[in-house]
Length: 256
Image (tube, rainbow, N blue to C red; front, side, top):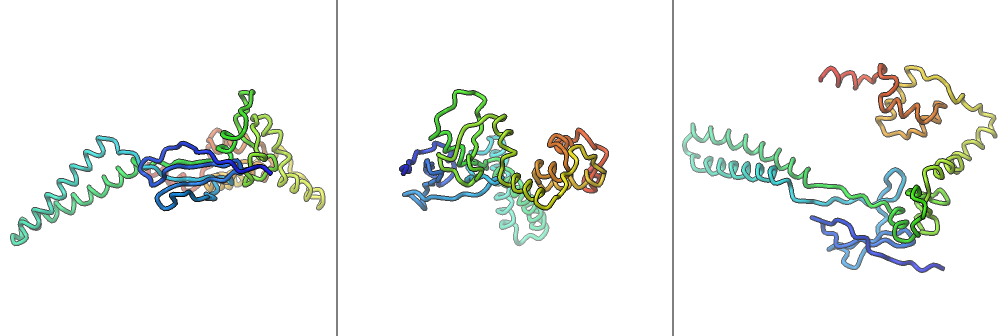
């Protein structure tokens, strides 16, 4: 039986409690931080059906934005001092209270803006890490993708992974178990195959655009309507059916 081997994956941990990450040839990820100094194996989460681990790093804010925030904080603190100083003088107190509240709101917005600019997401895709560390680099330059031999995206053991080209991925597409099962059911129950070049109606296009907004897969929509993947992509990119628009898109155009 193959022994599990762990290697450290150098990655950005700025502004986090993480100290390091390790990946194994069994497709497992181990994280180290102040809560788990000896490491903890994590299953992560699924990103488009692929096991991954997402975490956030925090870099220093742009100097100009940080300077604006510091100035806003200083002015807000000064306004608070004035409120305390003139608490027995109604007219001045009302003025500085109004100024304080205005500066408080400005400080809040700038704080949110700076926090957003400091925050960056890092995504570790498990099967790619396993391939990069434990699979021999292919001689063919076009083999830049990693496939799961058994089509199970959750099985990230090194023995189940291989480098592949786009052509190889396309050739494997029709051999996916789900597609083969779908084809078998059609034959078993004598379900007719929809025509490949079936024309789309406006209602079809509206439905497609609505589902695309919900991040439905292009392949799924193409199969449903019996059209090529490029047909759905052209609708998504606005190359075709530009005149057919969803209600929310029409409302957005009016507001602009």
